[in-house]
Length: 403
Image (cartoon, rainbow, N blue to C red):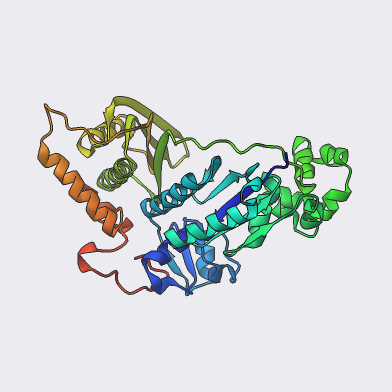
């Protein structure tokens, strides 16, 4: 049976989410990522890309290329929320899908053509996602993952491409070898040094020649260039852990700052648990010093999604690892062994006020953003906030300033 594999990718996902929240961002060059000179661009709008900016570029360089760009730190909670909205639509519509990142996934529609036609089904699903979430999305449809993913890239922004069986080689032929999944900057430069810039050149080369130069990677590149990919769509499974990290603009030994940011990070991560109706039973703390030595420690706890149960554990692990005389470069928190379940009141320690407090805080975050409410000890980290929710409106947007 002929396979039908769809690759769907939300266009400039982080930027699109921000624009749904604030229409004043429409049509403007947007950079999302670390706002300091040590930060990198996590995502950028198409308007910013015309200046030569791309993801993973140092933020300092991006600002130099486009001084008028609006720089936003971003909000992982909002992006997670919209990603889940998209996945809820997909889950209802198709029998088999694989989520590969927060904004892209594969769908196996093999055998569905006898009912509706795979292209029509995929196109209707795309339109439904756009209608129900407001997010632009593109897709590629072909007989395998590789060709579909490349086709999606060619379809962007906000469009769709179908590559019929037997036309894979002519479709891929004129494209840059950089379009091949797994060809990063280093491999691309190596290929260019050999005069290989277009996929056509790889297609015309014997496979054993690619193998001699690049080893097993050369064989994989040759197969992808020729549209050969038998890898299956793997059924999506719920994630078993969530984590967050913070790299400081400047290495620090400021105890107040460290604890403040740690509490704010942990509180935000616990909110993600509750919103996803999850509980954790394993807490991990990570610290990296200025010499890049990295240490982690973890502790098992009773299943929980309660701030007053988890935050003290994180503080305990932090105090266990932190060496006061060493400069700290990064701290991180991870919750693992996740299971479905809502917060349960501890009959001996908690009361109804605790539950009501969490519900009220979560409603505020749901409405105004996941950093709208923070504990007093986390106020040092309020530079991460999107805006003051009690003002009703975020302040006017200014270039190179986060909201």
